[in-house]
Length: 279
Image 1 (cartoon, rainbow, N blue to C red):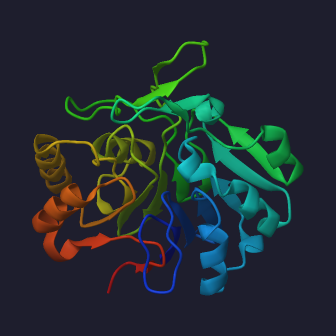
Image 2 (tube, rainbow, N blue to C red):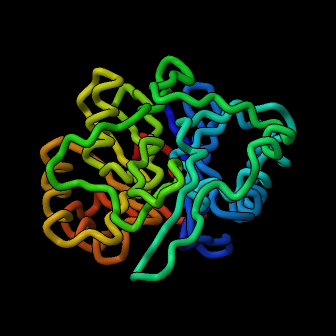
């Protein structure tokens, strides 16, 4: 089973491509073309044109969670898709999300568009906490339980669903899973619930243990070294064969993981294109 993954938006870029803080990947597998997240703005559609990707061929859009750096490109993407398209996500993507870093005042960080506008452009939201099968071997994780004792949601994230500024449980955090014959390929948005918890959920929903590759954001940006070490140890124990990090992993954590995984590690940047299995 061949899988093609093209990264259309990420914090850093390959030569000639546009970078922006956020993430968007175009995944082609099992006869389906899936857009996973949309970045923060125009990078996704700009880089899609450079790659020669016709976004009108997108079968479905999957949103990993409701932060604007993963949903801010949705309006522009829908104008390129030019047809009604299912948008798979958790109901909490519409929670009023806020971020506060380094003791600064919190600012709105949720979806920057009204739902009605996106629906007028063709979005057909399928909002559920449960895993969704896109094809027989292509599915979402659904809600990801917090199982490890060291992974945690960043303390700078809040929602205002009750009218009060409360810590965001980020129940909308999900990942995309491809059940290939050579192992699971897990596409991560931010892994706010932790990469290990996410991979365990991928194993649970597929009933498969072997993980071929985990690619995307790992949200180790604000984590300290003990968490990096436990994460690397668990990834090794789980037998993850390849690790490609993006976006919210952070430079120091990326460097540490690169040391641990060696040739099995890679940076997944804007303009990266991968064909799996790796040769």
